Length: 252
Image (cartoon, rainbow, N blue to C red):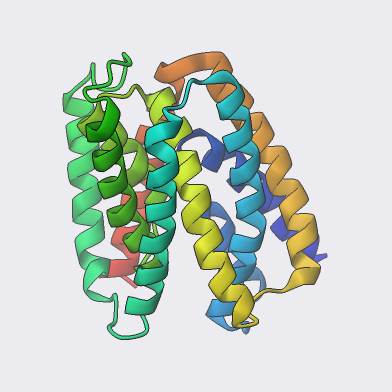
């Protein structure tokens, strides 16, 4: 019975994650609530083993419909994977607890900026091209990739925000590019969890199928309704992230 509950959560997580990131807000709490006695690393690894397939599906769908700047994003994805490895290594050396109280404050700033700049991300006018675009994309990939490996919550939303704010992408193109980089960082983290034996493979298969179905629907909705829809979901997801991370940092 438990696998049905977490598979349904995985489908909903795949739907949200495909649009703007933040699927971990749904799936991880479901896993921790369903299996409270399980080692956290095993639940984190099992989460990655499912979500990576939905991210791969949405990356492929976006790639067919949105003109991704592959020359910039492929190096950025590789650098992002390296950053994720470095972050995962760093968390074995120092505690990420100092980020718990800082994260909700950063997210409040992201939300406030997005709401104040009502036209931000509504039109796709890239600010850079060529080598400059690649360098900036790699800097974003390395920074947020490191954060993903070291701590993690809100990774997809940070990718989207930085692509919109720094590179002039609209929310749809930013989400498409974020998916590629998030796929790379997820694969890096997944490989570490797999090597350490922190994946329940019997749960991974049904959760992966459900996540792919949710991601397929979410990507279809984003492509159909465009950048205004993605912007609205982004604001909603960041708002929920603020509540969740704020509660974890200050109230729990």
